[in-house]
Length: 90
Image 1 (cartoon, rainbow, N blue to C red):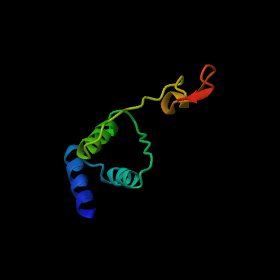
Image 2: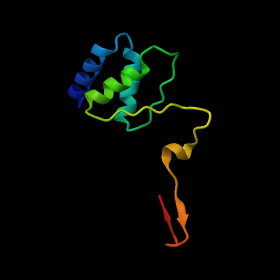
Image 3: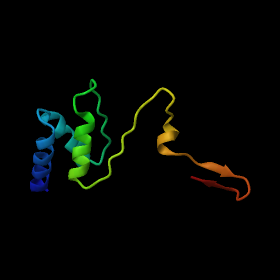
Image 4: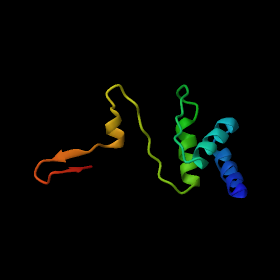
């Protein structure tokens, strides 16, 4: 696991320069199977780093743009009750 993590860190560091501490924290979140919220000023490489990590792990990249009208159910989905079937559907 350690060698794979080192290779991943090295690969992403080739694309995103000078963000080693942030990269380490993102990798901790990835290993812990947690959520990662990236906040910073525009133009510092947040999306680039996320794309690089996803590509290095052979994963899909999806970006969520938070806007004032975004509701939690827009992201997580929700159950609705179907009167005909008498059951909830997702």
